[in-house]
Length: 227
Image 1 (cartoon, rainbow, N blue to C red):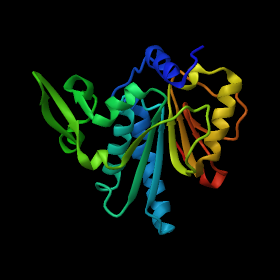
Image 2: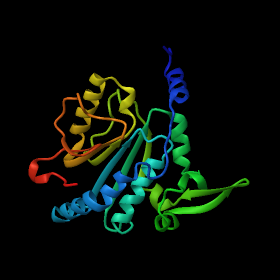
Image 3: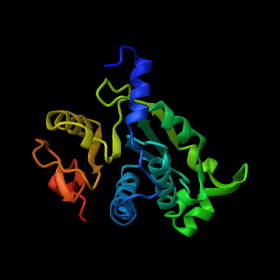
Image 4: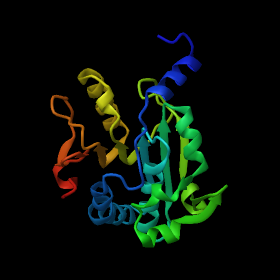
């Protein structure tokens, strides 16, 4: 085992696959836009609250976090009148450095719908390569930070939804159970947990209500989000 924190970080950087892209597993973003966010925004208005909080746990090079930020801005009319913050964390300092720059080759943004791409991604060049730069309006709602999910979490939440996709596959069932139940504690009532399509909570004891594959709600029956 590595003997220092720095050596451990280098080990994580070398082992992580960091396979990601903008709007990966598009069904999750469709669910947010079509089902969850309209109901959430209505609920917030009734409560006279403008606060929206989300977490991308295991954000890799940032595409997921920026996709979520774009989705939130699009759903709220560019965030006008809303207090939107998205926390994006990862254990790899290498991928966080890439994420913070918010600059991607054009091939990496092909999945972004054209209307959103023209609005939230700015064309540019890096040497002889055509790139897209995430617009300031998107970057301003995202905060990237180092976090080992197995260590104490230096924030209190609560979050309206959490994305933790293709992270738990690296953990055994007891560790998955501890992590899932910690997510429960950090979610608002009615909040959602999104997992990866290669992951399942089968065999994990938890209190989440099943919404649809890879989507789980912290909800009483009257609060439950319908697919």
